[in-house]
Image (cartoon, rainbow, N blue to C red; front, side, top):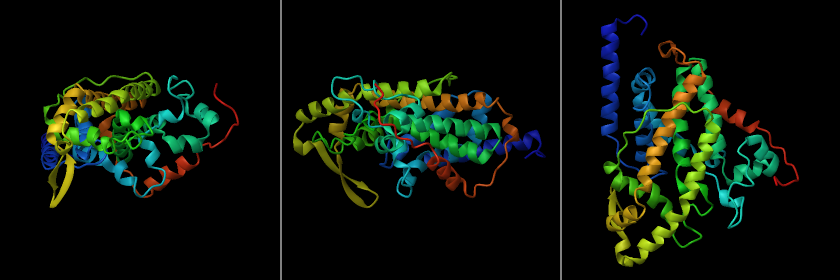
Length: 335
């Protein structure tokens, strides 16, 4: 790459951009988490909010950044420590009428001291894991490590996106306690599948975040605050439609599958008054801003000097570092 002429570099960058666009045009919706298509769009549009130098760097690797946005979901089935990184069950830490955050420190070590690491892991660690991943990404930028930079950038996008989903902040994540089973997939997958083409994803630009910790906890606050509407409006819309009209059947590949009907989804989407679009837009801006912040905090390294590193054992090294985290238990309450 260093020996290429300016003309050759331009043609190569144009090729990568064309490859990325072809890749995106051939993606089909899937039905996991935000929907695979939701996570992919969040990472893709986050690239477009970056300042020009960083944007050009990410566009060269757009297919990877987009496709790897769903890697954490795939890893949940093979890694026992992956699942808690996607949610936080806030209602475990308070009773009705209390401030949901009064007994839950934002600082990891303080939270461990209050509740034990076992408890935190059992009820989800997404805000703390986002902070952890930001420092991993910053370190990769500092070391001009292309392999880790792309991996951590793609994956932190997934965790930030999950933090923007109200149902990722409650033990009743799929309506199993309120006779609303299936609401998780309805809110973050089915509505995105049906409505996302009408969403406005042009936001920006990315902002430097003085404190990623404060920013991600603000996301958790806003997600949890929206939770009540997610459940109440689903109940309200369900009461306005015949039970026989709430579901329909559509083909997924060659399989005929029962899904929420488009009529019901349209009514629920309008009742939510654009909530899904707002949370996706906020996720896009947050992902882009965390990428930008990590690069700035790393000293804004020259992106042309990045080198591919040895990917071997990368996952095992990350898992080992996670397992070595402090797991002290203190027999006391935070308050």
